Image 1 (cartoon, helix red, strand yellow):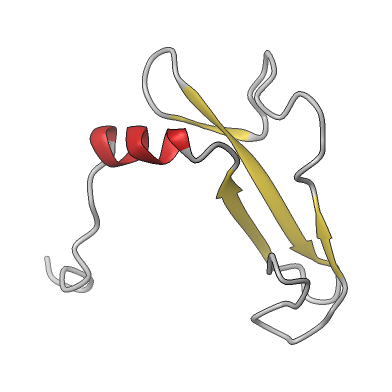
Image 2 (cartoon, rainbow, N blue to C red; image 1 turned 120 degrees about the vertical axis):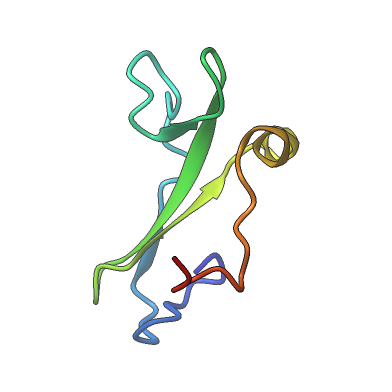
Length: 81
């Protein structure tokens, strides 16, 4: 959706929250936790035609922290229990 077109419905009614201030402010409402004291601010993109939302980590340096702290998803594990 970063290109301005929705991958779900094809609409070009896509809006970005990338420039919203205080994304990871005191309540971290637009951030994800990476640890006890670390948060990663998110840039959100919304299609107003179908409601699809995509979120991207705003700071590329936080991607390394995600890789260190979060569990990697095994693509072959879905459905196996």
